[in-house]
Image 1 (cartoon, rainbow, N blue to C red):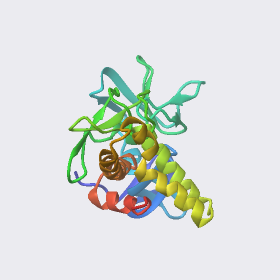
Image 2: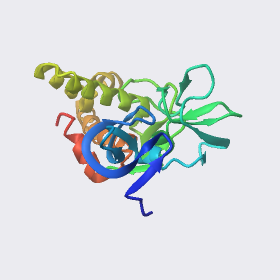
Image 3: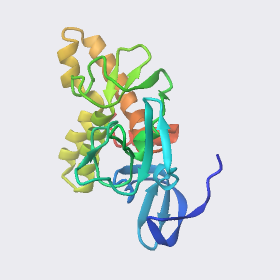
Length: 240
């Protein structure tokens, strides 16, 4: 698919937006979520949109919700706070909403790939969690990615929380020890895993390696650019 280098967007009618590839995290002015990689930007106004937000069609369908028709809204419809059914996070900006079924999806969540490949294994997007999440140790609501061997599951919401913790520490310029403490939590996930694999240290270490790899590739997809390069860049925010 060929992408326009410049475009007009109704959310920012003052100027054209130019496509730009960035390795620096940004906050999308459309959906208000984090992003990285390809974006559309107005330099004069410091205005950014995810590719998925800038090019969002007015109507979409999703294979998880076969009876739904999702319409694009520039702000959440109705008087009550909306929650994305994929990541379980509040909706503050652009959203896809099904009026009939009352489901909501962030544009980037609506575009999450069905399958992610971290180079060693595949992770498949699942509507319902049938096994415990490596990060929170529970099942809960929201989508998840699950390995093809069915042994490793991560909630999309949990990966977003890990990302927010790390970037918040960096953005707030906390002391280096605090940043290191938060970043160390991201790949290890040892607390929840030890409780589920007690007495099997080798498997816990193996889970840690897989979880770290999964987090990097899943974060890259959540941020709107599921590529190997972005996965490697995101890895820089995660302790080795």
